[in-house]
Image (tube, rainbow, N blue to C red; front, top):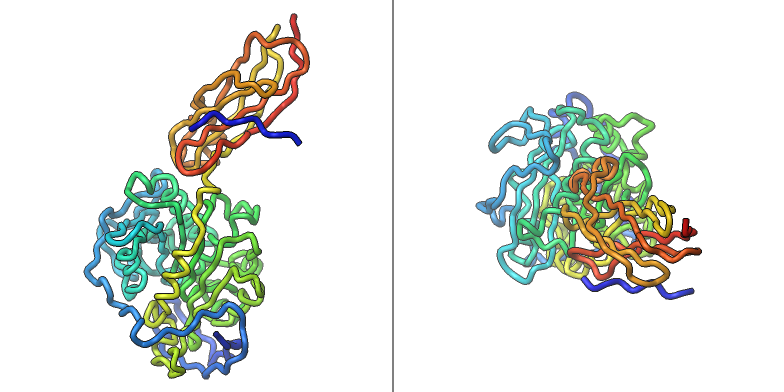
Length: 454
């Protein structure tokens, strides 16, 4: 990269869903099966902003599209020493507590668009990252320039699997893709997270908590957008949502913290909601509450699965908690293609910790920096009173940095001694030199220091 310059001075109508026919009870595993058979009343329509247009019958992508599609890379750990669960391909109800691994389905056709990290469903108690069953519209993205990464996460029968473990795993998977994805041929200029059911909840949390400052959600990388397919967006939205709160181990006082609607603000990346209007397993009202919170911002859009563009209603099963039976796939593809790239989020981060005299005509400068797009050390450039003075790699050991950025390691500190400086008040500025994606070399800090001659 070039040497940095010193800074200059100075639809459609929708309504709230009807009340649910009844509260499900009993064991969680049984509830998953029973809830699919429950019924609900039809929802009358009222005007709502940001509703996605209804699809034509001809545009529906079959749920079994790409049934034979296989991942190229399988069971990659996204956390060093992470939880691997059971070996081999597993069933929906495997007893292994999930895993901290991922599979990569690379884009095979079309112009490179970006990468979608997909999080499976299963109510935080079941589910598996392989296969992407009944997710034909998601798998079809590999023929439209998108790579798809299917990530596992710890479930509640795994080690420490209660809230917020799954959310922290989702954040770690996204960090891995952002840092290591290019080495696996992934285009990470656009990075989108999506998920079904409980995975849709996690995708919503990834999209809304990065700027929350809550330590439970620390480490979520910059995202271009997020997609929730039948996700629980508000654990207080109704009996179904509250049941899944218990499944995730959310106490009553934690239900708001686990709800994406709690964290949404206009600075979040754009969101896309897909939900059946007759869903009795996850309360549709959660989408309504998030839409109301987003208001007319246009930052969140909702695809309500209920009818076709000619006004005819879809099958009842498509309007329930089925995975990808009747979403408007064409509208989703258009939205994904219009999402912003992440170059502006790809600049190095760091800090100048020390600028102080270290003897006659000498100043010590120390701090840390790293580029989010590579685990390798990057260079820093030092300016004195606006003039380039020296450069060095940020490669000394900083355990605190390694703990904060576990995928990048500990070798990102710098410590330089500036000799032969003229006595008097001097301004020392340090810049990090971008190494990958990104457009400029950010200033890590400037400090004034008095240089002595003896």
